[in-house]
Image (cartoon, rainbow, N blue to C red):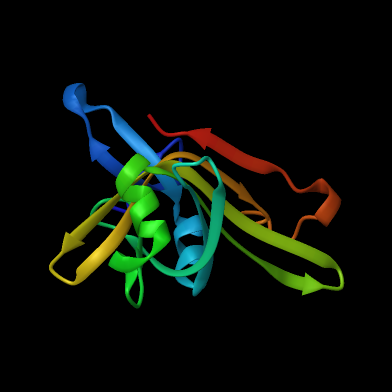
Length: 154
């Protein structure tokens, strides 16, 4: 579906909703960036309200337009239990494209997650509700002139 056009910008589509409304989740550039990264940070909330942030491996699931998180003993982890209880999650992938000049890139995803078992085992599946990207679509722009691409996914 990456070949679809939306305002002359290639975008990835999440789903055709009733009445044929197309939901845009990630740009092609964001998908390429995520595919080139191996580690992200998942934030969840414990029942007591304490926040937990964990480094995790992840992949972009093009069939569901979600971020899928897997790992060793995932079903026994606190993050998996947190998601199973309340579904609240945020996820960030970032890196330094260079230090001279200083070039930060990141994609932050806020959404609703589910702790499920699929054919490959336990997975935390994050459904984006808000995406914030920085430094991804403007590789030749001065660091202090970069814009933030933020949008709500409905």
